Image (cartoon, rainbow, N blue to C red):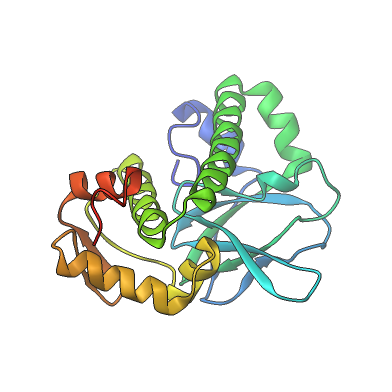
Length: 225
């Protein structure tokens, strides 16, 4: 129930526990899986955070996503024989592993679990759409405001604070993900703080004025910093 919150009835949890490798610990920087290695399992973040990335043809890393507790990593590889990306722990992270060959059989027997996986796959698709929209935005202010609001809503879904949280990713990962320079990310955080929109100290962030952040994400020119 920690790996897949509200996915199944209590009476079905013991059937899940037979196949799930629970609570595997990965230290910061360790790979959960690597790009192009054989695809065998999907992984749920139990605690901590995970970064996914791909290595481009030129050998550079491109960050493709961040995963929080309760989210599944590896769903984008289910139609392939190998993993489509790298997955790396951003901090000390506890992971639950779901071997796909056994999971397919179990989801066919547990409708609640199957429905939950459909929901997670839908969220994965929506996340890809949101990323496309995010990266099409013109200004750094828009991109960073949108990212902070996205993180806020994801923390809230997990019954955590949506206005005060610790960023699991470093500024250089944010910059890579958003297609910005690290200096630009730092500059925008400073501007947001000077305007009283957020408070930031290291990775600790408090969203002081959510409405202003939403307005920046929608129309940064009207609410320029």
